[in-house]
Length: 96
Length: 143
Image 1 (cartoon, chains in turn purple, cyan):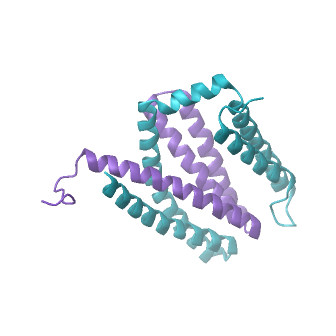
Image 2 (cartoon, rainbow over the protein chains, first blue to last red):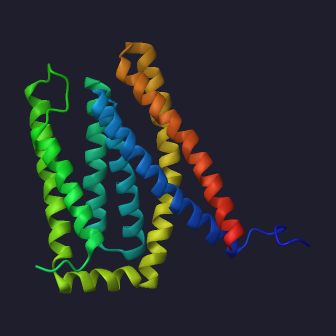
Image 3 (cartoon, each protein chain N blue to C red):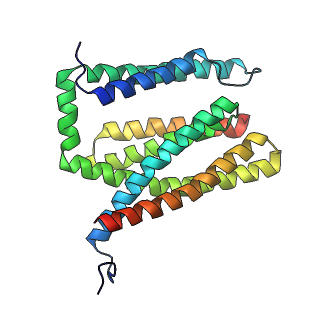
């Protein structure tokens, strides 16, 4: 059996999955930030929506950490960031 | 004044510069109303505060040491890794929803910024798929 053939999804695959998604999220954050700056420079109000997505991502990150660490500070931080993201998204949706 | 964490110090200054940009430069259209101008002011102050806090931490030996110990802790590293992975999963769904909502909004109202948002969200959906694929292939080969 070659080294690439693994019939069962095991812990190694979980680890690769987690690593790849973590790195992918880092790249995506950079792309969203660059796009936000481009929208700002071009005068397109889509930067508000992009910023909302960043805040939503940070909120999701905080909530997971609250789940693991069970520290209320993460939960409150996640709520605040989520509220900011939601407010930005609604502002973009309503005002354009 | 000694800089104990150069990376953190310079990233803090970068964030401070972005905050100053928000604070002094009007990012909205020339016909911006008072609310948007006030929002830029508040956002600028918040971002500047984060930048100053980051840079100040980099100048403190005690804080830098604490940050390094926390960063090297295995459980923290594992939680950081898992939380980013979960965040990507959630954001994939959110980006798709935003794309669909923007397209619906564009169809109903005809506002051009919705087109920009739909394009951006659609682009990010595709980007996430490809980045995840390529990074996954990289880690498959590495491990």
